[in-house]
Length: 217
Image (cartoon, rainbow, N blue to C red; front, side, top):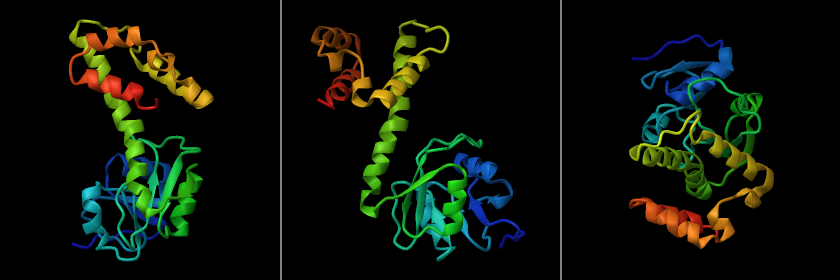
């Protein structure tokens, strides 16, 4: 069934997930937010899971842009915001926006007005770029949550904000100092401490601990 909408907005966001809701909230009247089943006229931004992009793009030939950071579809441009959405409008000033293909000027301006900093990303580098994003976001979160779970399993309940202040301080130091902001026994070459820490960990955390710790050596 065709979805009829008013054309007072500049474009449609298709997909009611966290990315779609966040961007819709930030753009306000400039965009309308619809579900996957809608087939609106005009320019469409596909804020849908990667697996749904290809089929949906066929419904909007020449007039859609997708948000999938790793996926490249010839003839379908991509604008990938390098952030983690939570469904709310946030301050995205200085947040990179990876552009692959001919993203329409209206969308480039709309992202720019939200503070995103666009850069051109070649299609062949998209998987590497996205893998780096996953390491920074999803894998970092997995490490923090896993570390907290290891402590809880042994009855250690951290007070206050738990491990989060450590994570925030570490990111702040790296932002200010670059590689010199990385602290701990691995940069110091403290092998005795590393050995004690490894002995305290269960598998597969031992292997993860050692591989990550030595990955920049």
